[in-house]
Length: 454
Image (tube, rainbow, N blue to C red; front, side, top):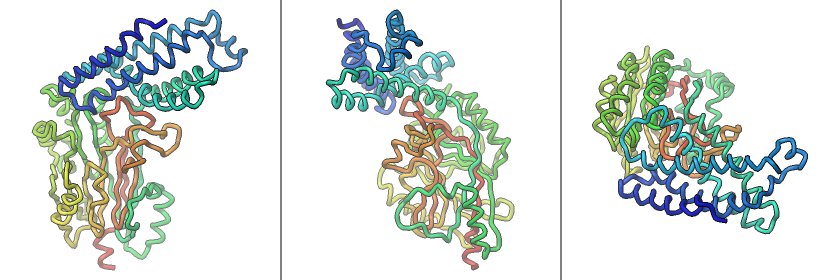
């Protein structure tokens, strides 16, 4: 018998999509939630409800089932699964509504709406294809219904872990090595060995012909995306810890706001969160990301208030101890990316006596366009570390990593790029297997000036 939920789910899903389009929400803002409503409706009607109605138990040993009491009188576990499913569906529906409001969410909203909808939507979207493939391949199998349910449970557990990754970020220290004389090849490739301390020590010994190695400390803040999962107190604490760790440079590489913070309240909240960075005056440099152009005046206002120097296709030379460092900020390019990147790198000439050239670049996709002989190190963000992946079980795979620079170190020619995993995130409802980043980068490098003297 078809339940009331099964009857209403499809029209509710269609209504949510139509409303989101009328409110002119962008696809990346509402699409994950509204598509999840459609996918979950299909999954429920064709996979889970027939499984529940059959009143068959999960395909595991009978003795184990007896101990867990999920057979026979344990039918009530089906009631709780039903309840969780419907609660997730309803929360996703209302979450798609709430995104049209430019208002900072309360703690209650986050824990009773954002998190449940994030878990439900991510499970619905990511489990849909694996379950579909499994059912097509094993449609005649007696256990196919049970295994479909087990697949959903596995994705649900991963989503629970992802919700914690979305709300909490642990501090870390990254040792990064850069030798501008080293040629890495003509193709962009991942090279995370440059993060390994033993590799750095080996290179130090190998390169003892140079006078000495230089070291500076950098903290990068990128993609904080103040809003659903990044609260003002959380971001303020990250900035306070940034000040306490006393880096030589603080690099802000874009994407401060989200849809829900497009308001006076959101701007005030961002100013409050970034306020500790006022103590780092003269050390804070910033470039723009794509989302900054949705609130460009407010973004400039916030950055000016904390004393950050905004670099938009421009550069500045600074002194850190006896080191002369050039910092170049490249804008986010929506078109003609290769031409714009190369042109602005060439225009911002690096002087002969510069020890290190740093480039701020929100989108790592533009890193391959940096001129071959630039001999620079780029700090980037944008990808949120790949956002969906298997990092939580120790594997380097991420979904975005299949087609773009996702996280870690990438090299090409004489240039190196460090892709930060993101202070916060936006878009896909939760971080799924990929944590955020709150790192202090110990950058070890050989001076460009010394290599020229050599």
